Amino acid sequence: MNQDAPYRGAIHVIRGDRWPVLMSVPHAGRDYDSELIARSRLGQAALEKLEDPLVDRLIAGALTLGVGAVIANAPRAAIDCNRAEDELDPRAIAGRTGVAPTARARAGLGLIPTRLAEVGDLWRAPISEATFNSRLAEIHRAFHDAIDAELAALSRLWRDVVLIDCHSMPPRPPGEADVVIGDRHGTSSAPWVTEAAVEIAQRLGFKVARNIPFAGGHIVERHGKPSRGRHAVQIEVDRSRYCLRDARSPRPGFERVSHLFDALARELGELTSGRRWPDAAE
Image 1 (cartoon, rainbow, N blue to C red):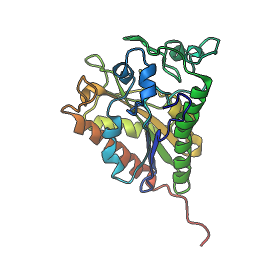
Image 2 (image 1 turned 120 degrees about the vertical axis):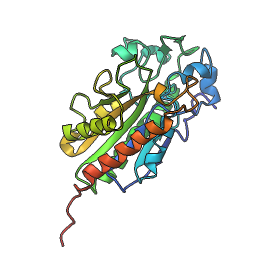
Image 3 (image 1 turned 90 degrees about the vertical axis):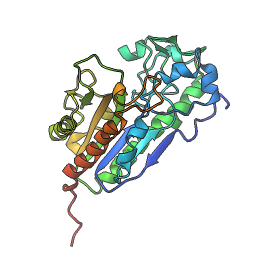
Image 4 (image 1 turned 90 degrees about the horizontal axis):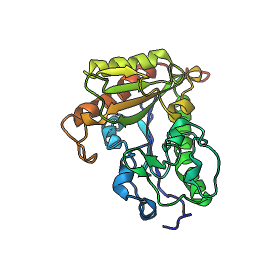
């Protein structure tokens, strides 16, 4: 692949209109092209550490319910769809100067990931402006444009729609929550939606925290507009509950976590599906 070629097929959109619910999966992409691997300082295995492993498979059952989804096939290593466009470490792009604008970008986890604490720098050299602009258009903007389009389609049918942004988190210490539900401290979702999501997870036997330590990233911040009937919640699940340490193989518990996503989609859909717009003039 030419270094300036677009990252084709980076986004997978599944349409659904049975429920006023859309799911998004930004970090489970595994389409590592040869150019990306060649740029890596330590190879594909190091880049895979950025993934939310198998989350696209966890939501497969929910999609059979008639729920839509926007899934990034391109890996997070190429560009992070859960970061704002200005959340960028300038060292990622040749010729850029300046200071990274946020703590996450300064730590190497900005729009273009540049380093991980456990492995150090990820890349042999920065990418060109042309490559950056290609990834921005073909992956990041395509991902968010697809979410906008799917939510708009649902909003034509229902007064309230819900975006469930699906993630995994590293194993938590004993006694801490194994599911974290984030709504940007009440700004990306109405309380009745977030509280319902918390209750669903607790009823299924998960220990749940709200907004701590993950309040939600760029996806729910950008697309959650509760005053307009668009509610966005981020779901983080401890990956040790469903995935072996190789981050490629399900472990006992996978079906239980998958059922959590099924239940969230179905029950949040049922909660909001009665709020359709009235028919046009009779």
